[in-house]
Length: 448
Image (tube, rainbow, N blue to C red; front, side):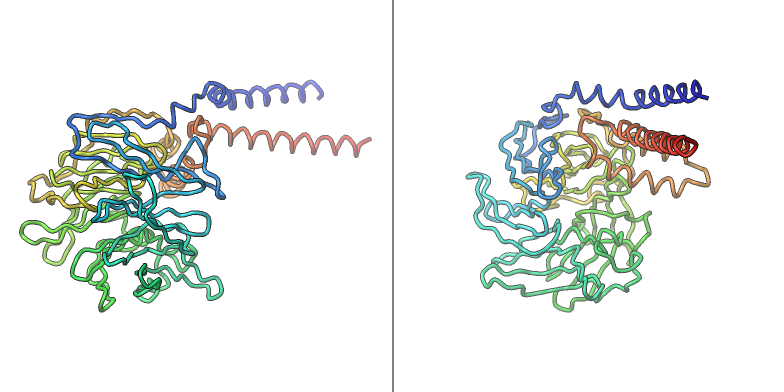
């Protein structure tokens, strides 16, 4: 019996070493500079003007991981770094060009959000405002010192309801002058009922005629709200209809030459960028790009030249692609870019629709330099592949999606997603082994 126990211990030890060895070697040979660098990818033609990128980075309990830094980055047309800006304990989300050439930035910290105007020439804040709002992604400048704010995660603990809302703040008077609350327009049953992240409304954009385009991400839809009547006057998508949108980010409103309303949107959980046109009262998808290669895109802007500037978050890159998906400009802005803008063109999309370019259809992205091979979602891809067509496809896909969007943020940067899985397996095996040893020890003590 003793020899069997010894053999089992040796086998377990060998398996543990085999599981952990690749990650140990990776940790010992890791070069931090290789993962925090900022570098161009494909540059087929210089961009018209600078590109400003907000990189979300990874911050936990007020501490920013130095290997996954949050920062604002400006890159010139040829892909050369112009400047970076970082602040301790902060994330960066929306970064919008303002009429005066400065940038409006949303920068959440622990339990609050700082919104500020940033002068790229002096690298200093012009002004800043602090709000008791958690994890604010979307802000927009409305003129006359007014700022629209997407106040997501506004959980009312005492009432047990969501107060997620859109507000307009006037800096001149230091007061909120307009408010629109989601629970006044959606039934409690939406998205499974009230919770502390009910809507995850991640964007608010003025689209003219006193209207706002909103993105309640968890509701799988983009909506237009009339500010005077407070009615929802248009809607693309419905809750849980993932064929249309699946937890999207940053929709932009376009109008075609013949007046057709059009929405360009980063369809994040579907890993694609899509464009919809409204025909006879119905939204019709006219363009899809990147479904086979994008990894959680969170911004897409139509440029005046007809190309689209895409922020491909978990591939850690920003790219300009043609209507047929060819990459003509690309930059790798680790870690986790959120928003990208070309300030020379103003805020958000201001180019032609896909239909106006006679380019409707579905296209793969081609010509990327594929600089990073970080393997962040290798396990997720494998899980989805092995489960396709089996009875466990649906629950496995849910696990794979969660893995793909959680592991990249929490894993050590030198460890692949396979390394995380091997480490988890080693932890489980080690716990079972130690538990067995403890039971055996107690039995021997009892027998004695």
